[in-house]
Length: 457
Picture 1 (cartoon, rainbow, N blue to C red):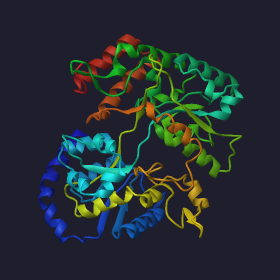
Picture 2: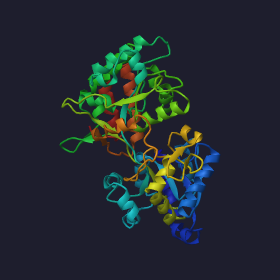
Picture 3: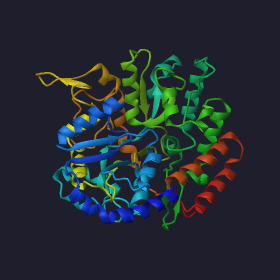
Picture 4: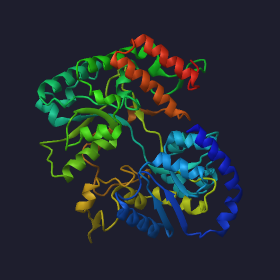
């Protein structure tokens, strides 16, 4: 990643010299976008989505949605290919800002009544690097929660609201789920241990926050690598030793985890995921004709902290940025403005008018069969517009999940987040498998994190 970005910087320093000239000579109505989650579900729908976005903004929209997005993005930017908007997650954003590869949008944002009034100020604050902002929003990121299959819990004699919010309380729940399910392929709990992005509800039991934090002297450290985290890692090891943790958690990605949680497979009963996924699981099941008597996902906030509260993680921003060699900065900003409106939020959630939903003469919205299968997610299950109203209502379970958002906080954005995840995940897997003792594993984790420049101690 760093080597690619070094090449990218060299390219953008050259292409940036021609950015102003390109803006003057380009078709002012064309905006070229490279997207990951935004748009239609297939090539035909991508064209319909681009058409709808173009008609709404008065622009000619070109959208590309590659399968291997991160790799494709770096290859295209390193080759100097010009896009007006590119989709980024938080660590990619930080890397590209540091490389000088993104257009400073601070003045555009402050001059836009839509962007200043329709987006919560706190969201913009999270994007500032040295006081400047180099991206706008695709959607509002929510927070992670514990997802539970309510039907499986009831079959095991458990009321999910009565689950004790402690590590032992969840351990007892997993044991009961295992006893009630005779399938050899079923494991009560699945997680993405190699990426360790979904551990916060459990680390809350030790009062720890994910990512990198600073101590009272300003020295940075990783809480998950401290000795205070040992009881949580011991809990994970106990789950693995007793066949309560899916061993595929060592290699599974988020897609694998979600597939095992969905109504079609039901190979797990508990995981940790974004609040929106509570509703997406339920909506996908309903679209497939599965009733709530057979399948329903509910949510909990995980384990209480030693002080008696909860500590969850709020998602880092889901962004669209303008590369320095973009041909149409003003057009790109116009798209960002549209995404921050009620109408733009409808396109990003419900989808394409006449295709995903219809509106009758009385203003009633109805999802089509196709729209129902898309679960009101075309890039933003929850749009960034602070006043957005979904005319159909939230997917089943999301309203409950949103009640936990006050417990959530954003982690500090770090440019080398992939290294952080890789190191913590590697040693976590070794400790949980029993290949190394917990104290020794934590010491090795800390040592490598410091050596890689992720933290200071």
